Structures are given as structure tokens and as C-alpha cells.
Amino acid sequence: MKLYLNSKKMDNYKKSNKLTLSNKIKAKTKKQYKNIIAKNKITENDLQSLTNMICNDFKVNTINVIFTGTQIKKQNSIVKGYCKVQKNIKVIKPLHIKVFKYTSTRKKVIATKTAVNTILLHEIVHYLDYSLFNLSKSIHTAGFYKRITALKNMLNF
Ligand SMILES: [Zn+2]
Image (cartoon, rainbow, N blue to C red):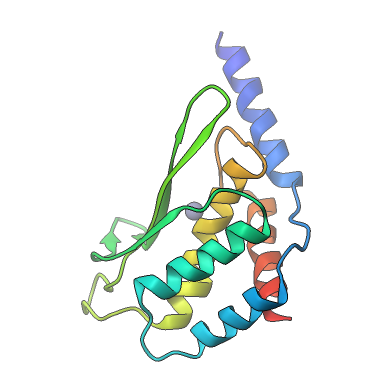
């Protein structure tokens, strides 16, 4: 049983490491990304509209974005956001992506670029791991970080 679980984990790890995102981002999504990134103050609507457009481009269900709360300080890291989905046998039900609005230390509203590039895109790639690639768990492999960079590049060109 344990061996089975370990091999399943290994399988998920290998898959996560190998998967690549092909470019599906449309011109209007890139335009929206540029508009949002240029804003002084980012809103939940901005994050939601960009997320909806990216989900539509990849032909996956949209996921709610919540922009509120304070980042959580842990021993060696700061939790800046997360992605929640519900998994049944074969079906992934998107719950929400959370982007914490305030920094843990100075309680300031996070910068627009941090909200979008550092947090939102990271959580969207977690969501795509589930919804597009059907991974049983979305983990931080080298491949995962390559997918974030790829998505950033798609939006920037
Ligand atoms: Zn993550």
C-alpha cells in the first residue's frame, strides 16, 4: 500500500515536471494584462477579469478570485495567496483563488505587479495544473515554475 502511494506521488511529480503550457493567450487578454499592470491600485474586479480571460483562453472553467485579508507570516515563508479546488473522482470543481490584499508586516495594500505577476499568475498555474492537466496535486516542481514563466511571457508579448 505504501509503495503504491509512493509510486503515485512519484508519477504526479514526474508529470508536473514535464508538462508545458502551449500558448493560447489571445490579443485582448494581453491588452487587458497591460492595462491592469499599469494601474496604481488594483481591485478584485481587475484580478477576476484577467483570470476569467486566461481561463477562457485555456478553455477551462473560470474560478472566483478573492482579494482581501492579510498575508500570513510563517516561520520561513509568507503565505501570499492560495488556490482551492474540490476534487471528486474525475471532476475538478473550482472553489476560489485567494490573493491576500495587505502585507503581513506594514499592512499596506500590495503593489499591482506583485498581486498580478507574483501571486495571481502563480495561483492560476496551480489551477491549470488541476483543471487543464488533471494533476492529482499541484506541486512546486521546476516544471511548475517554468509554466509560470511561460504564462508571463505569453501575456507580455
Ligand atoms: Zn504555490
